[in-house]
Image 1 (cartoon, one colour):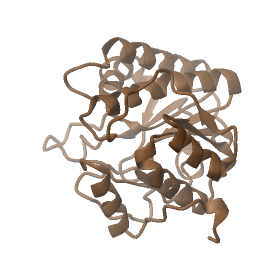
Image 2 (image 1 turned 60 degrees about the vertical axis):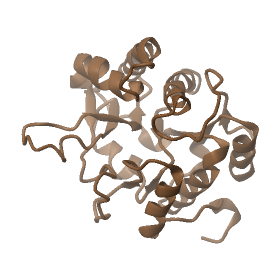
Image 3 (image 1 turned 180 degrees about the vertical axis):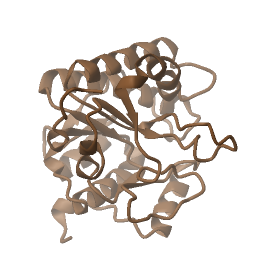
Length: 257
C-alpha cells in the first residue's frame, strides 16, 4: 500500500474509441458528466479521424491521444485481433501520460455508465497506489474460496513509484505475450504476472460497487458503474444500456442536462 493517499480528484481519465463506437463514447461522457465528473480531465485514445473528430467536437481540441501503434480496425468485437491490439495499446499511452502530466490516471472502458464519480465514491477510500475493477470470477465461482481477479476494463494508477512500476511491469508483460491463444492478454498478463508479483500494492475493487455485467445485475445504491460486458457485439451492449435506462449518446456539453 502507498504511504500517502493519492489525489484521485486530480486524475486524468483515459478512454479508447474507434469510429464504430463513438455513440458509446458520447453515452459514457453524458453519464460521467451527470455523475459530477469534470470532463476537462478526459483524454481519448482515438484510432481514426472519425473518432478523433467526435472526441474533439465534444471535449474540445487537444484531448485526443495518438495510439502507440496502428491497428487495422475491425468491428471492435471481443475475439477479433483488432480488439486485443487496442487493449494492448492503452498501456503505453497511459504510461506516457503519467510520465508527462505527473497526475493520477484512471482508465475505463466506454461500454460502461458511471453512476457515481469513482474518485470520490471508491478510489479515495484507500491508500493503494493501484486499484483495478474485479473480473467477476470470484462472485460467480462455485468455490467460495475463489476471489476476483483484475479486469483491464477499469484501473487507476497513482503518480508515484508504485503506480509507475505496476504499469511498467504490465506493459512489458503484455507486449511480450499479447498474442496469447487465450485472447485478452492484457488482462491475462496482469493477473498472471503483475498481480502475483505486486499483490500487496494492488487493490481489487469491491464487486458490490464495480459489478461485472455477467448475469445483468441491477444497479443498487452502492453501485458505482454499470458495465455492458459479457456480451458479444456493440448492438447487444447498447440494448443492455437502453434496457437499464442509461442510453443518452450525446455530448453533455452541448445539451441541457
